[in-house]
Image (cartoon, rainbow, N blue to C red; front, top):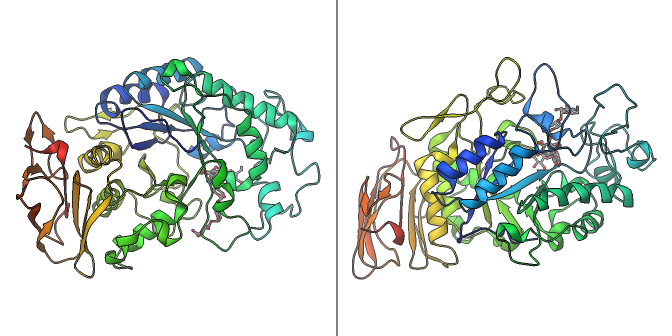
Length: 475
Ligand code: AAO
């Protein structure tokens, strides 16, 4: 449940938010597979209430049944995606919305009649008298958090055997199709004991997809925990990973120069984060990049310079399982993903420089992020090493004798000779160049026989004040 079962040491997952299954399958073959991405978190595949006419992204979080038919595609397209991604070394992780059903039933039937499953009023907490604060969630009251409706979404009674059975059936169908695991939406709003009972009903992963026998599904539970509430993410650690929301907030404080980066020398568990093997980390997610689920100063693609720096830090740093966000552009936080006049999602188009368009941002295609995903794979298992800082916002650190990164988050230049821990040679600065066929398309760094290298990085006015080198991009 903690192991993401990635292939070939791959280390970073990308959330292809609102992408269609056939576009994801293509992306696995054209980009994610070749560039060493471990897997894709996909948007909820379960059929959802259609919020018309706007068709906002968030309608996907309003399930009306567990059939696999959404704006991302149908069941056959889903299966095709899992197969094609598997063939190029990329896993699929499903965003599972099981805490609740939609606020409304779609077909004029009774308010709790979700006949596609079917669920009725006997399967929900509120009509069964289990919600103490009917007017909304009181985050200081654990019963309220876990039994009441989250923003009006009908809260399922996961204590019921029948409900657990229906949910397990849904998740097991996905396991049969070859998925590697799940992001558990709104886990904070479910009792850990109920979740455990459901997880216990899940099958082992499908060995036809290269999983070892007896492999348990990967589980990452969405629990927003900034402290001060009745539910803590620590309650979920013995049943899976959790989303560590403090990580992106603290990272943003550092890169926004509200907290000197020198303090990041012991970033991770020492900062009160959940243990490494329990943690999923990210710079931003689909909620907080648009002010849902707590925004609060996190860095997004809209601030591309800092975003590239923060992602480089995350992907170089050993703590947590990292997830890269891949967004669509928006000004209205509730807007639909790119769509045509009939409301169908439109595919991204790709340009010669590897970026994409049609309303999609494709952060995972930015050279700096793509190459740092590779850095993470190359340095897996290597110790955090050779830390250096200037006392403020210039830092450097390495990963054993495999990789080294230098970040200048000051306005003034950085000019330092630093111990990299790396073998002597000429390395490609993968932030500014690609390493193809033994050649770097950007500037190089020379590491001498004692592991030292000279770094010169301009500050303000420099779009990429980062140098990253690793042993797989050495001339
Ligand atoms: C939509 C409409 C609603 C309407 C509803 C039903 O917006 O007005 O009532 O439909 O018709 C998404 C959207 C929702 C949308 C929903 C269904 O975000 O706007 O509702 O789909 O379409 C809480 C939960 C967390 C949840 C987050 C959004 O704990 O699980 O709210 N995230 C997931 C998904 C999300 C999805 C759902 C769940 C529902 O990722 O996309 O909703 O399936 C505090 C609490 C958090 C709480 C936030 C927001 O956070 O701690 O637990 O998250 O408040 O209510 C600082 C604090 C931080 C605090 C935050 C609050 O950062 O440090 O602790 O401020 O602002």
